[in-house]
Length: 203
Image 1 (tube, rainbow, N blue to C red):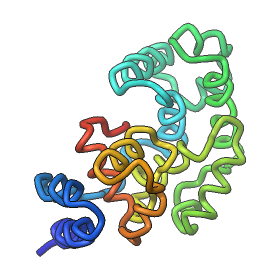
Image 2: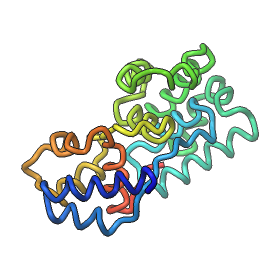
Image 3: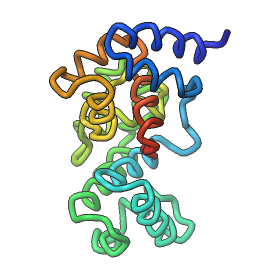
Image 4: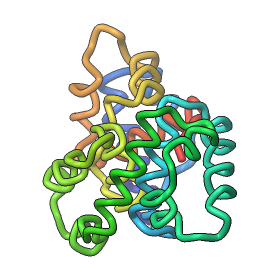
């Protein structure tokens, strides 16, 4: 049995003690793997996460497509560091998001986003390093920890979809952080199951 299947069976057992509805929902879902997605530089993934905040997957993808097209083959980080913020806003980004992309680019060029260095940190320390960058908050750090670094124990309580889905399958009166704690040290997988239930996994 592989790791994803073992976690799947473990989750069903834990969920039975919390909510039969949650247990049934997880049982109906195929085991989910959590490989890190490092197909792009960390700074670019961080920029994309910021750009997609509080947007539907479709809207975030459309805006990011325009951002990449406007870079016209140039390095995205170099583009964000030198372009007029209005150019980014013309792609559909808010003023704050355009400023955040510039701040991330500046941090990358200053050597502050070395994926190997950050990957060697504990997730809490990594989060603290990331949120020092203007415009990068807890949600963005959680997405990077979970998807880019493949950290198995991140519960993104600031993600509305994950939180509301867990509430729906358990109880709105019980804090989701408390429920998620039962699934440690694999809380990232719990988030993946909740997004799968809602069919809304973030990019």
